[in-house]
Amino acid sequence: VGPNWTEAEVKLVNRLMPLIVATIDDRSWRVRWTAASKFANVIEAFGPLPNAEELIPAYEKLLQDPEAEVRTAATFNLAAVAKCNAMVSPPAGREGSNLPPERITVAERLVKRVTSLTEDDSEHVRAALAMVATELAPILGKDATISHLVPPVLLLLRDAASEVRLNLISSLSSLNEVIGVDLLSQSLLPAILDLAQDGKWRIRSAIIKQIPLLAEQLGIHFFSDKLASLCVAWLGDDIASIRNAAAHNLQDLTSLFGTAWAIEHIFPSIEEIRHHVSYLRRLTAVKACALMSEKMEPDVVKLEILPMVLEMSHDYVANIRFNVADALKDIAHVCGKDLYESQVRPVLTSLSEDYDRDVRFFAERALQSLEKEFNQEIVAMQE
Image 1 (cartoon, rainbow, N blue to C red):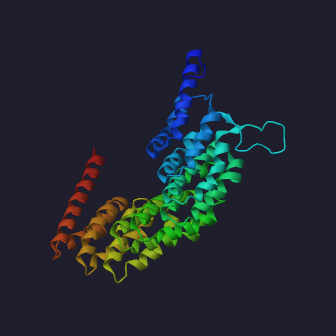
Image 2: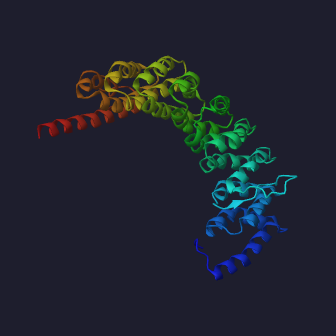
Image 3: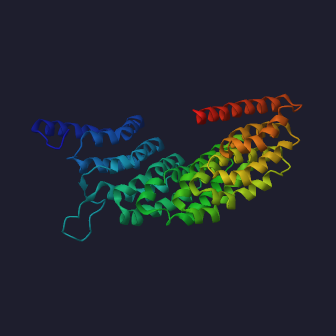
């Protein structure tokens, strides 16, 4: 329905609205769940809403439904419903005043429900709220966000359930666009540290994926002081996928903060890890070096990264040696043809004669790939 209502459309809406509102009081929780799930579609379908005074209180009833499944479905739609451009009365008028209450936006009314939802008994409701609460910030504006939205967000950051905290951290970009995360930085830190040590490896993996975005929002100084060491510590996780994600995370941080930052805050720790008694730690150090080198300045890679990786080619564990061969294939791209011929090729040639067949395979593959690449560059230059 468009903004210019015809008489027939008004009659149709007036007939439909009581039916929609009636579903919210249905005895069957599945009917109420369906109403909660589709409520945002109802708001969107009717465009400029003539019956907001009926629908919004009905939606608030869904947020307080006895069934957790219904409250969860309604909560997922919170931000979408808040975008409704109608004006409504506040939840309660001014007592003792004959003046009609000043009308407010739907978002201003619904944000007052957020605090009570942070105290919901159901973890699923709170997790749903954590996913959508920050989307209210662009709708409310800076002042209202600071006054009404930041306090419940801080409560969610301290929630007992790791999934709730993770969902909120994953959705901070909307809040950052309105107020920045300076107001949340001190509360963010303990939440991140706690999630980083969560017993569920999927939670740890999910928080690692959020680190580059958080780093950009928190800034280089705060991140370097509080979280850089945590990013290196993930390289020693017991789960292989976490170690791999940690290596890629260091690559993203290097791209974000630059080569000098990586050499100062990350490289010394990797230098220590390569001497670790566990070959899995040493293996992760090799992978991290290869990934970080792709985002670093070539001169620094030649002076800092390449010598360390070349030295690890003598590791007594074959798994390390063939990963070194694989890493040198990537690092040589950055260092260039001259350094390949003088330093990388001799090491790969030696590894191609290793007693372990896997080491020989990866070394020969790296040699073939690099020879082909650099020969093509020579031909291209001659043409």
